Length: 166
Image (cartoon, rainbow, N blue to C red; front, top):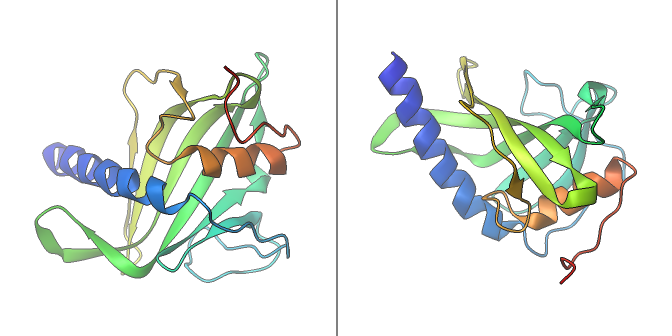
């Protein structure tokens, strides 16, 4: 089972790498839509705020689980709903409706740490894999793509420049 989870995590990261490029130029939805963590449907009032939408996925920020840290960073949860559901790796029998990423985001220093990845199948089964030895990564080189983090920082009240300072 552990080997499956590690393989699933690795293939999910590969998919998220490719999704990062899709996020460039995406739109932010300020209409206050939300989604419930256990559903791929938007459900008002549950804390999920839509921040990016593309034809292949919708990204949400969970405003009910924002945890500000003493060092100025913030722990947040992102939810990615796949349209249509996605498969990872060579196992096409399991289709994933959504995934969630737990991140520690430091807007002021344009960096983030991957803390955990949770995958949700179309049947509702969930598996969570914490990141071993999380390390700071520049949002500009992160697989999820800088635009996602820039929009999230703005939503958190810590807006940052679209372009990194040189």
